[in-house]
Length: 132
Image (cartoon, rainbow, N blue to C red; front, side, top):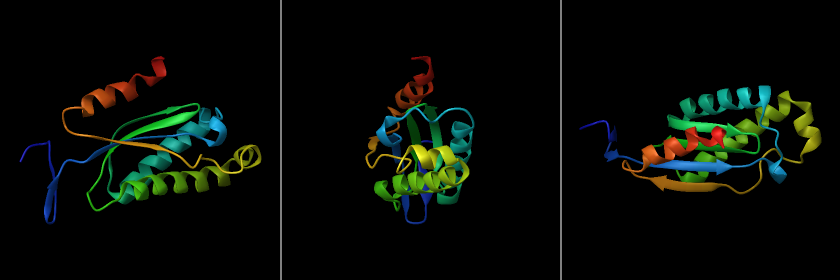
């Protein structure tokens, strides 16, 4: 096997997802210490779920996340875990997030899949978001 595939009991896989989600009303609140804490929380949840982060970028009004996950984790569950955990932790820590918004994240999100060939394109896209 090469680095292209991952192995778990009973299967060999290469599953990559590109997720994008926004704060409620697309408010530009993901800056400074909120963005720093969000980064740490995402890394913590990814480790807990055994999800490999290929890249992510936190913009003031949205987040891009590129991950590789086991086939036993449904897409909606992965997003729910990241959004629910980060919302709970950030709203507990930052009072202004509780006062400004009824919920931290909007209900919607984008989820796209990527094979081995196009993951580099997605990683570059995410890495270059701050330059725009």
